Image (tube, rainbow, N blue to C red; front, side, top):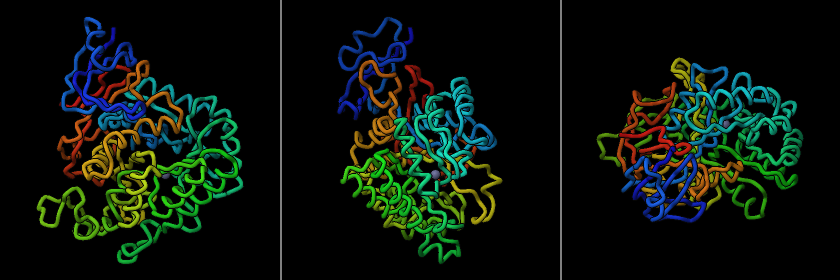
Length: 456
Ligand SMILES: [Zn+2]
C-alpha cells in the first residue's frame, strides 16, 4: 500500500483555514488524516518524512505555463516542463494552447493528454484556443474542446481584437460553464512595441508598448463579462490602470479576475538599461540588495531575458501590482513560463521573442517580495497558488481536506539558495534571475501521495 506520513510540519491549508503544526497522512493517493490521529492511522509500512521547520501546503498550481509540445520541443517538452515545475514545488500546471499545431480541436487535446499521462511528472491541465488557429477570426469548437477536457479557453500569446467575436466567445463559454482567460493586448495601440512606453524606452531607443494597450482590453473584457455574465480572467497583468479597473469591476460584482507574475512585481523597465541602472534606480532595496551590497546580480544593457509580453513596467506599476495582490484584486500568482532557445534570445532586443522561464523561481520570488517583505501572510500567499486557481478553473485540487488528492508541497520559506544555470530542469535558459540570491525553496513535491522530487 502506498502511504506517506509527513511529521511535524507547519500545515497550511487556506481552503480550510488551517495553519497549525501537525502530521499529515496520505494513503493510496488521497489525504487520509491530519492531526494527532494521522500517526496512529498510518499503515505498518508507511514511509515517514520529517517536515519539522517546513511548511506543508496543498500542491502548488501554476495556471499559466507554455510547455511548447507539440511542435516547439527544442524549447521545452512535457517531460522537461513538468520536471522544472516539480523542482519549483508545483504539482499541477495549466498549459497554454499556442503550440504547433495550436490546441484548437479535440484531437490535439487528446494528444497532449495522452503524452502528459505517459511522460509528465505532475498533473497537466489543458486550455483550448478561443479562435481557430489562434488567428482571432473564427471561434474554435468550444463545446467539443470542453468535452475533450479543457479547463478554460484562451488565445494566450495573442488577443482577440474583434469585440463582437469576443462577446460570442463569452456567450458560448458561459453556456459550457468554461472560464475564458485573456492575454490583454490592443494591437493597434501596441503595434510593434517591445518595451514599456516611458522614460527608459525613450532613453534606450526602443519602441514603446504603452500601458493603455493592456488597460483598453481589460476594460473591454469587463464590459463584456458584465453584459454576458460569463467569467473573464485577465492574464499576466502589468499595468496600474488594469488593477484599478479590475478592483472597481469586482466591487460592482462583475465576474472578472486577474493574475500576476513575479517578474512584474520584482523588476521594472529600468532593468533593460542594465543592472547598474536598475540597482541605482528602481532596484534599490529589492531583496535587500542595497546600494553598498557588493554581490548584486549583474547583467548588460538590452539583455533580452528582460523582454517579455506584457513588458516590465514602471516602479509605479510594480507598486500597483503588489497592492492589487495584497488587497485581493489579483487573486492568482503564476509564472507565464515561456521557454525560448538561446539562439532565439541571443539577438538584438528588437528581434528577440518575448518571454522568460519561471517555474523554478516563482515561489522564492513571491515569498521574498510578498511574505519576507511583510506585505502578505503565508496563508494568503499560498492561497494564490492553490485554492484560488483551483476555484477559478474548477479543479478538484488545492486543498488538504481528508479525501482530497494527495498533492502536497513541502517548502522551507527561509532556505537561502542561488538559482544556477546548470541546475535548471527546463530545456531553456531564458531567465533573468540566474545568479540571484533567493530565499525560500520547495524541499519536496508530492503528487498522488508519492514524493516525485526531493531537495537534499
Ligand atoms: Zn500571454
